[in-house]
Length: 384
Image 1: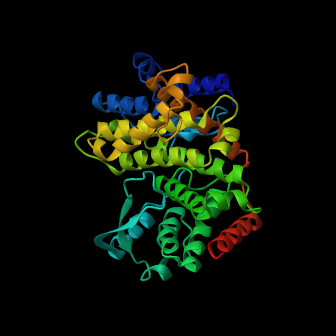
Image 2: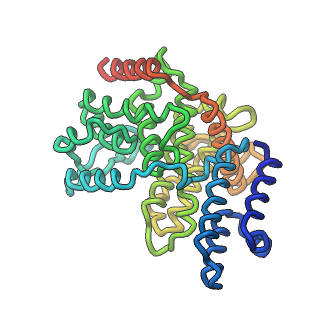
Image 3: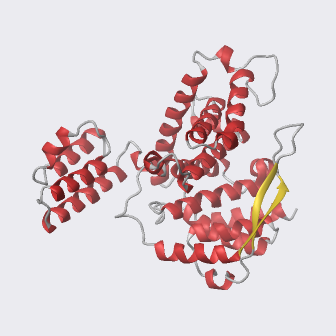
């Protein structure tokens, strides 16, 4: 569906409800369709004009609008979480989160980070120990990607791969399916992003490049897509929260902006092919790191995200995270630091839309045999 067809269908939806068209015109400065519908509902309630029939009509309008966006050729579906298209996993997730809390050791421990950016500072990761042994049997037949990835990752960290990879495999089958029934579940999407990122993390850069069983471009495209989905599905929530609290949605968005930047840097040469001509992966790195820090500063945790800004600035000044005297993008780009950040932000959105369209077309689908080969390659790598 092209933009003209989409606009025509949306206008027909608006004219479907008496009074809605004029309300849209008077609120034309608000671009969020569902926000205007919500405001219209409030207006009807305040004017004592609300009825069961009108409420039903508005719900139908929202549902049809989401279907229009989902089928749009411009990839806009990367932004939308549809209540009408999601499965109801709230009870299952609530139960698991409580089980997870019961299995978590409240004491923090520290381990040396796998990636060390600096010569003079030893970077460590703080974490809480978790032992899922008491609930493994309860969730052994569960295939929800969030639950499976949450169980898989600590077992893989503990090198208990017979358990970790079993649950990781169950999460990945949704990642590489199209359509994915969890695409409109926030926890489902988060679980998919964590699962495929864990796959590339366990394989490592060299492992990913040297394995004949892995389609590197397909996996990296899929990782970028799901990370972008996580980033953008929090857009509305991040805009609406007050600055005196730091909700999980903000923390997740900051984390995944930084994670996406590191991913692009690790596989820079491959992302040059994925991004296409004229898009420099280093600029995308600068943009994601700087935006992550901007969010951190906005919500009062700039002291934590400051290093992300420093890394973005080093890349801008030196073309590398290692300071040097050869000059960086500040000398060769036709834009300022701030302009490059905005340019990178726009390009990351356009790329996510493009990857989403490819995903809907089945370009990143893996069948059972291909996924099994991938897991065998991972098992062999981890035991080599």
